[in-house]
Image (tube, rainbow, N blue to C red; front, side, top):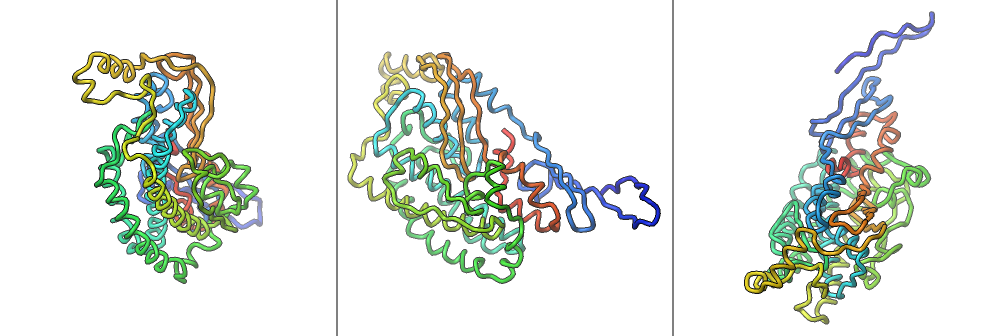
Length: 405
C-alpha cells in the first residue's frame, strides 16, 4: 500500500489522508488478470481507475489473418466459462453472411449446447459470489455439475474448457447415445442440487445483508453504459436477444425472462439463478422436440463450406480436395458487411464482420459484454467498502478473457 504525497490544505481545515491500493492484476479477488487502482479513505473507496490489457491476445487481428474455418479456436479463449456460446455465435455469423439455412435438428442441438454453457457460466458466477461472501459450501455443491457439463462437451466434441465445438454449417459429428444419456442425467439430477443451492443462499440472512443494496445500478445508468444480459435485466430492463431477435429457432421454445428491480448484487444473483431454471426448461423442450426429427441430421447440406466425411477424405480425391480448400480458406466467401449477435451468458455477444470476398475477414470486431459493463465498475463501487467492491465484481461476472480480447 503506497501513501500519497502530503497535500497542503488551507489553514484551519482538517487534514485528511487517502491511500492508494493496487487491486490486481494478479490478485485472487480480481477473478482474472486485470487491475483496479483504488484511492482509499480507510476501508472506503473514494475513486477507482480500471486497467485492462494484461492478457491482450490481439484476437481480432489474428482473425483477420486466418481463414474463416480457423477462427473458431480463437473465439473460445474469450469467455472460457461458456466457450461454446462464443464458438456457435461465430458460426451463426458466417452462416448469416453465406445465407445458410440450418435444419431444425441442428438448431435444437445448438440450443441444448448453448443453454448448458449458460448454466455452466451462471453456476460459476453465483457460487463464487457465495465464496466471496464467506460461504464455500455452495461452490462445492454445484461444481460437480459443471464437471458433468464438461463431460457432455467432451462427448460431443472431444474438448472440455476451450471447446472448438461445432462447425460452420452444423456439428462435426452427430451426438452419440452417451452424450444424450449424460444430458438426460444432468436434467434429472441438477434441479435438486440447484434447489439446495438456492436454499443455502436466497433467504440466508448473512448473505442477504452482504449483497442487498450493494453494487446497485439504475436501469437508466445501465442502459447508458450499454449493459446487456443478466446485469441489465437485474436492473429492471426486460431485454433478451433470444426473444428480441430469435436465432437457432429460439422462437419455438417457451421460457420467461427473469427481471430484477434494484440492479444490486442480490438481484444479479437471483436473476442468474432464475435463468438457470429457464435454461433447464429449454433443454427439456429441445430434448422432446428432437424425438420427432430424423436422428441422423447434424449439419446443413452445404458441401462448399462444410467438411466432407472423414472416411471420404481418406478414400476419395474430390473429398480430399474440398477438405483442403475449406480448411485453408480456398473456397469463395461472399463479400458483405453484417453484424450478428447472440445472447451470451454475460449479455449481447456480437460479431461485426466485413468480408471483401477474400480468404480471411477484412475486419472482424467482437462485442464483448464484459468490456462494455466494466466501464461502469468505478462508478458502481465509489463510496462502498472494499469488501463490497469484491462482491460487486463477482456479481457482474467480470471474466478477464472476455474483457481483454
